[in-house]
Image 1 (cartoon, rainbow, N blue to C red):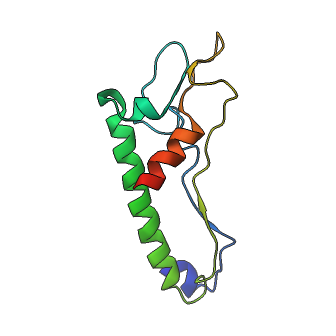
Image 2 (image 1 turned 90 degrees about the vertical axis):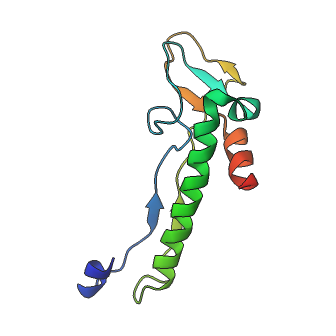
Image 3 (image 1 turned 135 degrees about the horizontal axis):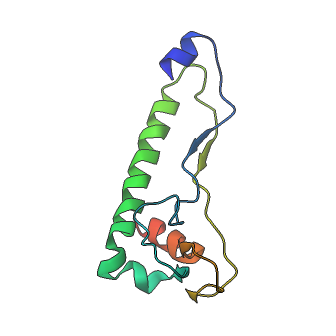
Length: 116
C-alpha cells in the first residue's frame, strides 16, 4: 500500500478473499465426490473445526487490513469488502446429483463469524 500511495494511487476498495465458505476457495472445507452443504452443527464437529478456526483467522487478518487502511494517507476512507459467500439454494445436506461443491451454509458461516 505504501508503494501505491507513493505513486499517488487511491483504490476503489479492498477485498479480502472471496467465497470463504466454498471448498474450492477455502482449503479448510472438506471435499468429496458428492457436494454437500454443511450447517452450524457441522462446524462444531471435529471434521470441520479447522473451518471455524479459519474463520477466526480471517477476522484477524480483516482487522489487520482495517488497521493498515486506517493509517493510510490516501486510502483511509477506502471501503473494505469482506469475502463473498457462495450461496446454494439447497437446505443443509446433499446437493443435487452432479454437484461437486462442498459449502458451509451462509447462515452457519455468519453465525460462526459473529461468535468470534
